[in-house]
Image (cartoon, rainbow, N blue to C red; front, side):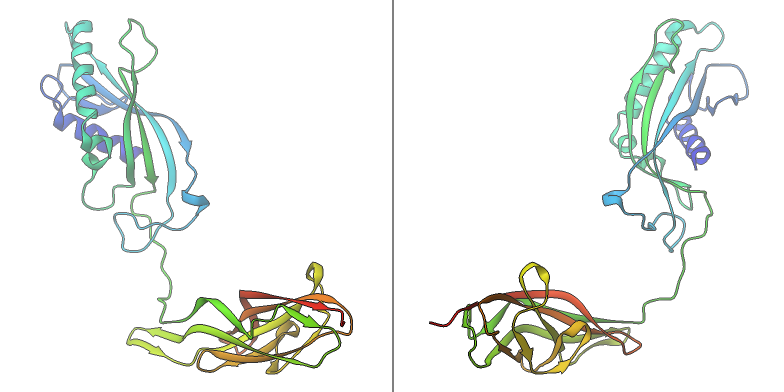
Length: 300
């Protein structure tokens, strides 16, 4: 992770800087062979970064086709120029000038200068100059840079699992329509037949050998009263379903339900949800698709 990043940064800087700094960059406290100035690279403070939208998903990173767990970090890196014999401060300033110009290049700022084949142990989003310190006896490095990205142990295995062999997709085109468009019902009157019109595509079985369309299936329809309690009226039609819902088959984009109003004034809502049957054959109420408000008024 960080050790791989340090080594790669030192190698790239050593290959890009001109003499007398070419080939003289090492990870602190290592020293290149022979006399001359030394440029040391060392990771200092490291700060965790929040993942995108709070996601903790595995990521597709270099080195393996399988997704792997990564650590999102911001690392502050010091790049320090130490003059060779007789170089003095002027050599330190000259080396710092070269580093600032090199690190400000586009391929360093987006991290692409450090990309190499294989599994590097890191993938940078950005690399930015954070500051420099050329004061005599300064406590900081010649140049400080901030690197942000993903880090992981090189060679770590990616996440494997069973491939998805088949998926079932059901599409509903909104809005759903209730016919007739009833908003006022009189208490104590007879049943009111209602037609639910669903702009729908049948279930699509998506498998490796292609896509097969089948009938849409059914919706689960329930009745909700004021405050989310039980409805004052009653629903009939279709089959009994989970949670007291009525399960209605959708044929040619239509389903029929009957609402019987209560004897007194009330307000009810017809709630239409997807009807889901899992692989084990167990039915449940799925995503809510629409609501229709019914105001039941006193007669007269």
